[in-house]
Image 1 (cartoon, rainbow, N blue to C red):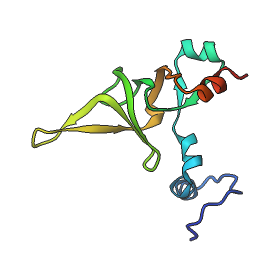
Image 2: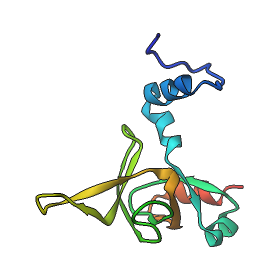
Image 3: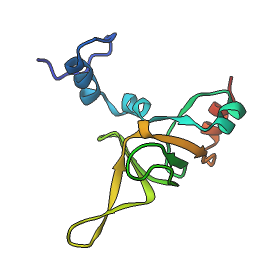
Length: 126
């Protein structure tokens, strides 16, 4: 099986090919995998359903053991397609705390970091 990424891939029903596509995708395409739904207020304000996640955004966790907690995004790991949120930690057996990786599909943006002028421009574009 080829490990090279295919730009012409249109999709497949087979989960193995979907996993292969995501696994071999370059970083500029992996950025699209961390798109997160906007809250209802932001959705009406920007007329968009989802936006790519960025460090500094405030997110609400919708699934898992940290459900309904909010916090700022510390890191977006495109290589593993995981998001780390400030204050979301697990306690390990030895008592130390470790950051808990979250799947972007289980998050919702509550507040957008608009320090980036290009991002602001893209949000307001119809």
